[in-house]
Amino acid sequence: MPDGQTLQVGFETQGQNVIVSPQGEIGYSEATVFRTWLRKAHDSKSPRIIVDLAKVDYMNTPGVATLVESLQISKRNKTRLILCGMNEKVFAIFKIARLDTVFEICPTLADASAKA
Image 1: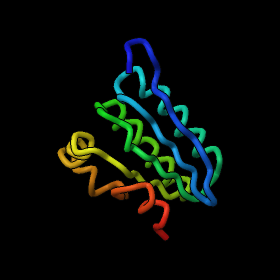
Image 2 (image 1 turned 30 degrees about the horizontal axis):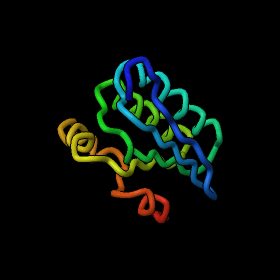
Image 3 (image 1 turned 135 degrees about the horizontal axis):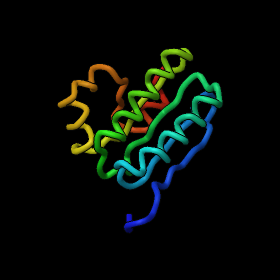
Image 4 (image 1 turned 45 degrees about the horizontal axis):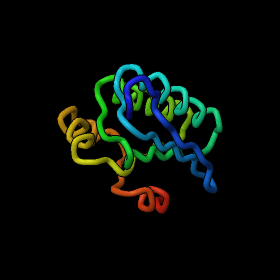
């Protein structure tokens, strides 16, 4: 994304799923925007929140921390949080931090939506 642009985030409800779809890089300044959309997803009281990361090219510590915070809120609210569509670079960050063992991660949005 060009400098100065904020993160673009798609937000939709499909049945019992709320799908949050960020697009671009999630760095320091974008993490605040991302957090706002994730909180909106939690406020919807949907039983499942799916974060589709297919269009996220890069994520650094604040982006990961935002997802960890969202996972904590999910556990508190008994909401299921599913991440999907990670590219290899983003998945490597989760693997290095061993967060791949903490988060529910699916390869695609279709896989995440189909999970019971």
